Length: 63
Image (cartoon, rainbow, N blue to C red; front, side):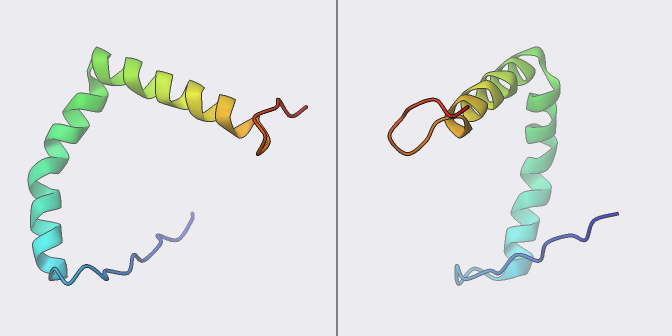
């Protein structure tokens, strides 16, 4: 199994405060992405990202 990446906090906000906020908003984020609207938006985001990844820096399609 892969190792978790350790994030570096350079914000000046104490890590415990960031974690408190994350624990508060995580259930709402999870509920959104489990909803039909969230699934639709995520699929659209992935489609746009794949399209972007298939272009070179000049905007031309890459084989």
